[in-house]
Length: 162
Image 1 (cartoon, rainbow, N blue to C red):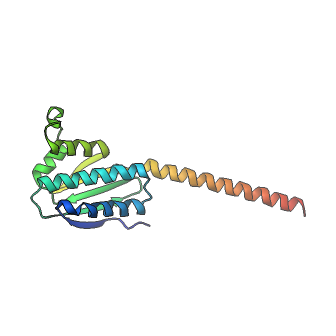
Image 2 (image 1 turned 45 degrees about the vertical axis):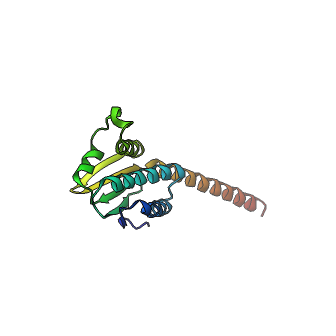
Image 3 (image 1 turned 90 degrees about the vertical axis):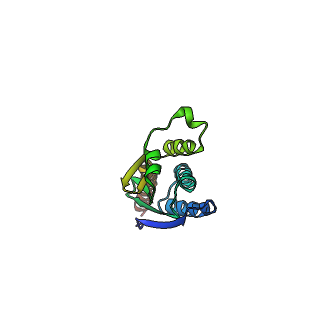
């Protein structure tokens, strides 16, 4: 069973992006996340980190993940109120081309299923992975059915030739 509520504290400095990548790698490896979901998670978490590096006054950020195997929530704390408002509010497409911060926010919103303002100073990115685990379940179920159907044929042949 995967240990949930794992967290990491990372300095809000652009050279710490590798720590973000390692954190996402660890989460995705533990949950058997495929490349498509991995790419969405990595890109959105990296973009949020870059946005916070550029716009946040805090020295470090705590990142925590939790999963119930249907979704992954990755929470960031502390985040200032302006950043929470920016992430929760609408993106003005007219200004999108002229402001890098809006490009980050647009990309984050495009890649996550939900953005939650959890509580004061905390925001959470949520990814629906239920389809992934249903797909894994279906594949494993079919493999077991194939295995047992071959076993029963083998047993029938052995019993018939006795």
